[in-house]
Image 1: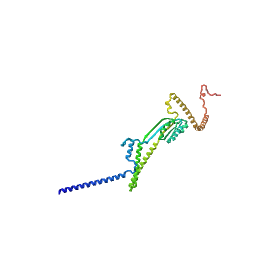
Image 2: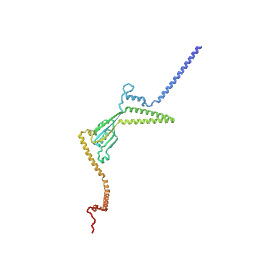
Image 3: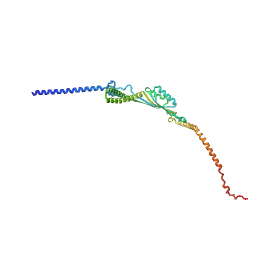
Image 4: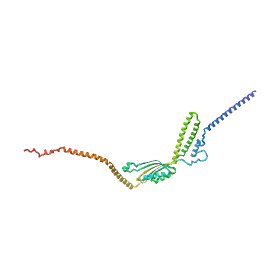
Length: 333
């Protein structure tokens, strides 16, 4: 009898253990299904959207450090910003400026900014030598940038020039990935906004939309700016009007040529001085005439007054004639 009771107790214990195990398995299955359903809702609906894995793959492709087999290749079209600067010396300023503008227009470029200094009224009026200078910032198509910079020597002497190339492929690719992610987030928020029912949810979603759209505008503006700089290179050019090119300056001339140049400049300086002095006299002539008209009558009046004063004053007696050694008492009859 005791053996039967032990057997029944053991059977009941096994049934309880099996029941608990079945309940645990069912709960785990339900949890997995719920998690799988939740993950499906949260996944991007757009098949072409860029995820974190895609961004990492793009970086690996650019740097060549990917985990996939083989060596990654650089993109066929790299994003490179070219820029440069140059100084042009010319003895024919107006002609050089005209030819430079023709060169820019001919290659499809345009002027971003410009300024001309040196040709002021004071220099023209005083007759002094005022050399002009022009500052330009050009935007040149990238495929014409090299040929354009090489042709600057046809305008005059080029004592200085430099070029720079900046590769922004990595930054450009990362910014594009961020933009795609923000656009995907915007689409999700719009979908949630269409399903939201409470005012609190609507306000929260709209705030998130505002932040995402600001990021989208900022990233889009950055990409457009890069596209402009990549397509059109920036070139800064200074055009200086000179009487001697840099390689013909005094520092490279012989001593005799330096003396000749110094003497010539001195003669020109003396000539400019007398020209300036004559211009000063001509300019001051009206003032001198007015001063003369005022001064002459005053001088005449002063002279007339002095003459009248002298006429009224009696002549002084000579004391020596009365007290001399030959003098005596007056003659009396």
